Amino acid sequence: MSFDRARARREIGATVRLALAMIFAQLSAMAPNVVDAVLAGHQGAHTQASVVTGVNIWVLALVFGLGTMMSVPPTVAQLDGAGRRGEVGPIFHQALYIAWVLGALMTFAVWHASPLMALFGVVESMRADVTAFLHAICFAAPAITTYFALRGLSEGLSMPRPSMYFSFGGLLILAPLGYVLMYGKLGFPVMGARGSGMATAIVLWLETIGFAIYIFNHRNYRDLNLRQRMAKPDLRKIGQLLNIGLPMAVTLLMEAGMFVAVALMIGRLGETVTASHHVALNVASVAFMIPLGLSMAITVRVGNAAGRRDITGVRYAGMSGIALVLVTQFLSSGTMLLLSRPIASLYTNDPAVIAMASQLLILAGFFQFSDGIQVASNGALRGLKDTRVPMGITMFAYWGVGVPVGWWLAFPHDLGARGMWMGLIAGLSMAAILLFLRFWRSSATGRWPDDAGSAPLPIHT
Image (cartoon, rainbow, N blue to C red):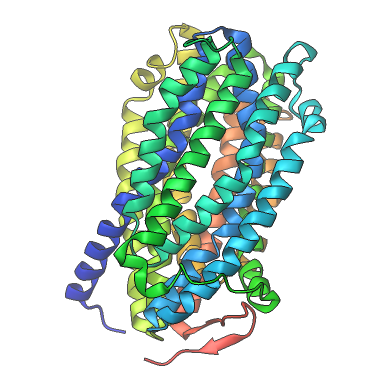
């Protein structure tokens, strides 16, 4: 295939336009955790620690729900690209059934999450408030899974702005509502960590209700006939969605679990090292929202081309998106490498924490490229509904390479937190190489999973 510069420019432009709203939506979705931590921090270290610990447990359920519902965007994008919009509404109804059952299961799991506190090493004095936070926020699980379905529908149709608007609107409500409930204003009792969980749950329900009203009434979705009678549960279609989504959920859990495991092992090294790790990880997490948003746009662009049975379009969509991610990662890497100490100083005045966090931020700067390539390649593979082999790749890379190498360097070789972060570099680099090669091969041969997510389907230009 000869390189078409004009087509590459068009693809890059389309991906950027799609990705900007998705990136902003991702940053808005992450911001509530920052708001919760800041509000809790001003009430005291105990409340802050309880809320942050509760958020860590909640996020494990959240990423599983997000991963499962990530089957919606590529499915909708392929139907849209194939000119089969009439099938979008019924498949969306099946996604809603999954969202509601999944939300109920997540509510039950988070309510009964006490055993995880021992795994996290939560001290007895904090467990009551962590439990109060989790018991309040768990009722938002059906709301967030439904929100993911709505968002997947809209983004799959290349309309990402509504999710950006509702995520940002929820953020504007959360800060004052959290303040009122946590600090006991306007006649409410002081509720601390419980108030933080309640505020987040209320905001998530408001976002979801608002988003649903918008989608079911806006003219851009009218031809989908969403307001007609709900399609009955179709076990075959539900199975197809789960066949795509569950491997994604496991993939996200593998990555989230790797970072949780690293945090737990670093926790043995003392308060200063632990605080430094959290500073560096928070910076890296914020930076990650940019390639993550781009990867979601890549999923839609690749899925749309796959729906048209356009091999060349799939290759251009994926490779243009990966090239864009490399540009953003060059900027984030340079910022971390050149400004590690000033960035660390924004989080703390402790010289020891600043010194250690600066070293870790330099290592974070080095893994920006591998982290960007792995998430972008995974996004391209999602667009092809190729999720089971990537799941195996990430399990091997994170748990067969990343965690063991990190432990080996951190403890037997006494490199401490730096060793664990070198393990992160190794795991993310392995994932980046294998996932990129997987997409390169799939896009070159034109053979990828069909709608059932299993048998290869020959695609013709």
